Length: 119
Image (cartoon, rainbow, N blue to C red; front, side, top):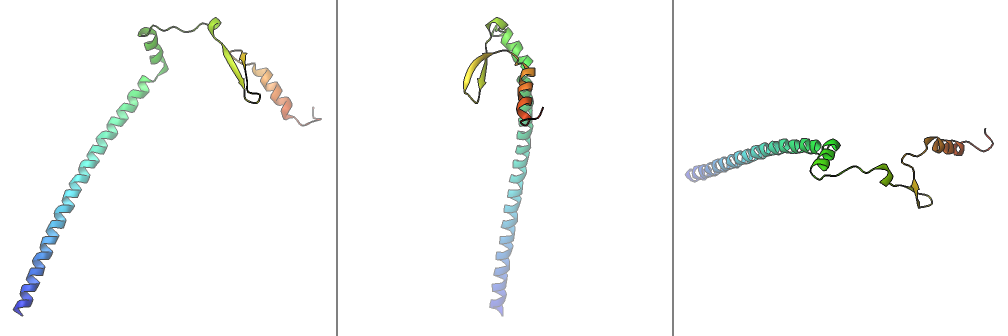
């Protein structure tokens, strides 16, 4: 009977030590998770600030202003501008006008869309 009590007491002490060590590990992991979540929140705030800054810096007017002031760039005049038109079917490149004639383009597509014999 005494041996059984000693054996059960030793088993109880081992279980208690196992419980204490597992609780310690769980608390340590919980603290690590909390730190990681706090760091993730800080990184998210930093990422959002960088996106706002990038949006502000990528505005066309800001880019144009910096190009004119810091790089002394100028706009190209119409007489020095070439507009190229690429025909995807024939794979031919030709000179074109700045804005294609929309009426001519619309008229061609309407004629193609009608069935033969319909007027």
